[in-house]
Image (cartoon, rainbow, N blue to C red; front, side, top):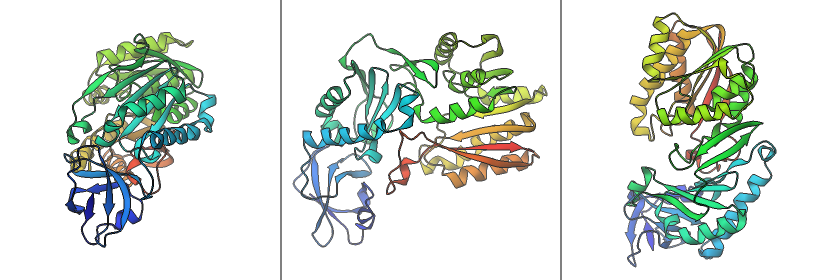
Length: 393
């Protein structure tokens, strides 16, 4: 059992699922990592049931705010069922066979991420609670989705904060499904579930890739951090005149070239460049190169607010270079997936980059994660991806 300090139950009253170590007055009954504990207010009222995590600053993650609800295998099966029903109702199911099925806290399953790539699931167990219930969760996923294989990618840095060791590998089904072919709005992609970033593909950018495709016709396009070619190939399919796609990782570029070859597009109009994006953007600027559409979807610069200051400099640097490279009338689609940089700060950074570049610019659209990455109203931390479509006038 966890007893909270006086006044520290306010966030729980608002249904926020995290209990930080500083809010805990007392722990009784010596719970182990992942055990379900009752959470009591300072007045002694049970206000939630949560998964205990002694190694983490997030000392407990709430399973339920109903003190009478049992947390057992049936509980997790029901939560998985509910999450799958949300996805089945989404319009994206008509356009893709790849989908985020479970989005952690926003689906009432803190620390659990599950992505579907055709008939293969990729699961991440990132907190002590879901680690404790790993086998029942895997059983429910296998039964309810009917997928032929489940690959575990519990290799994120956040597991260390939970006192958990890294783990990856097939845990159910076909061991030959490492490279999964998927379809997204009529385009073909190969997903490397074993070695790719996150779970292998950035499903959160699905609708944003499609939007870039619609904007690309007749434009010279620069994709600054192309990964496995999602934005670049969409731009090409949208009728771009030419696409330059930059990526520092050779394995990612290998998959990007496979993705290009898997689609009926004019491959001669897409040039892949293995290079550091920051250095190559400067080289392009110094060479007086110009583009009509620039896409910047860099890796996470600031996982937490503590890294926001350094991340702000990096975001400003690449966006300043992008404004320098854009022709008047050009478009910048720029993104941040850093949880430590909120939407207001990101807009301020991009605005500062435009000023320093001597560019007049205006926001035409705002980008967010696709609908299969829902954000619970009481958990704003779930809204990590933000982006802007900016017109250089």
